Length: 256
Image (cartoon, rainbow, N blue to C red; front, side, top):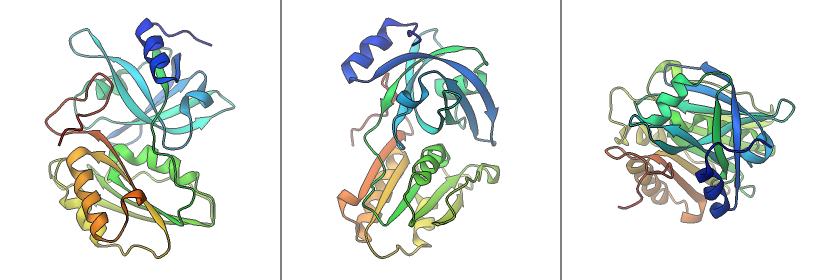
């Protein structure tokens, strides 16, 4: 077990009743114009938790101070004791700077697993709606769906090159709608609304997972309720909020 470099990580993990570890950057790869993959090694299985979970990473800010940012886990490789993160670099925050500059061999404090939105195993179909920052989490969750089942992706991309794909079980029904942001602000819901309008929700019981910008996700939630989903069929996670920096806990303000 690698001990975290900062006592604050140990204290935070104790309060949250999760784990604190020091992981090593095993690889960093630019996947697309907007996404970088960072692979971390160390206690991977326990830190990554279940599909839908995330980890808190201690990163530097521009003022020589430290803050934490939360990243959904994309995948786990138990044999190599690694887990991967797909990180959006479409802005110039501390998370994006860390993803762009992480060096193989670097040590980083990780607190996890975090998150309260696992896959709804009782659902017949799963609808994933969000922006490019959500792709890693969406793909991990969809790859854990028991077959037969159905996964539907409606994802807004900043660049056509961000349309990354994944491999799924042949018996899983998969539908993907990629929407071009086309210069719209990240807090403009028009793109995802158009993608949602182009799709007829399947029958039976489903669950919607809405991951992305705060204002957009709340607008999409209202639209889903209007289309007949119950509140318990909708899980919302705001990764960020336009006009505000995420707090020290890596989350945006939830004040309306």
